[in-house]
Length: 248
Image 1 (cartoon, rainbow, N blue to C red):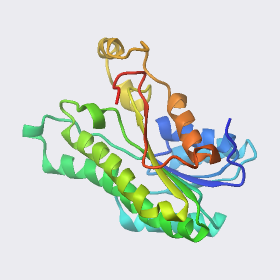
Image 2: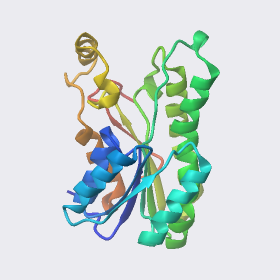
Image 3: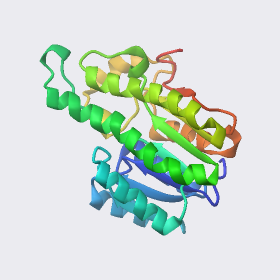
Image 4: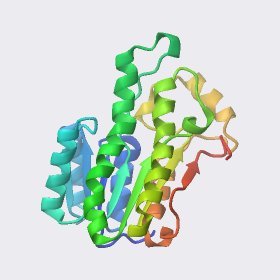
């Protein structure tokens, strides 16, 4: 396990799935962890679980689509920990539907949460990172941002936008010793994929050369690596974690 001792990490969308597992993995690697999401009950349970391991944790009720809540959450984090070393932009929602019938509110909601939310968090993370002249920003995109997917024009557009955002910010702040990378998961066993029928899951597995869906830990292992000192010379990169489903 790569060491993140003495680091402070914030992960959004941490109440379940990849976000929850990432929070636990960051804590296991030695980082103090702030977990952000809209579900306060799940966050409280997660903070208790992390605290039981002897690691400091902070729950932040935050809707990343709301600029005021993002500012408030980062203020609370800095008041408690005094610094921020790692930001993991993981919060995401889906509002699937064919493009020709997609309601504008469904398009707007996904773009606001999945793309604008990451931008708002990066804006708040940059001042403390730039002051420290060090930091790691990791954006969670998706295999569909690279391959496309019918019925998810809003989600694909937002996740593809995250890749562009990653590359742009990586160039902007490289001189401050801050790296910005993305992780692109394939089909992972999370609450977001639990709604799929067994038949659909079996069809998906046929498209994956490794023959299985991924686990949250497959993704969080990539996050821990990119957050570590060992990844100090990697920036603007998209790390695929998809079992070979899409090769780029």
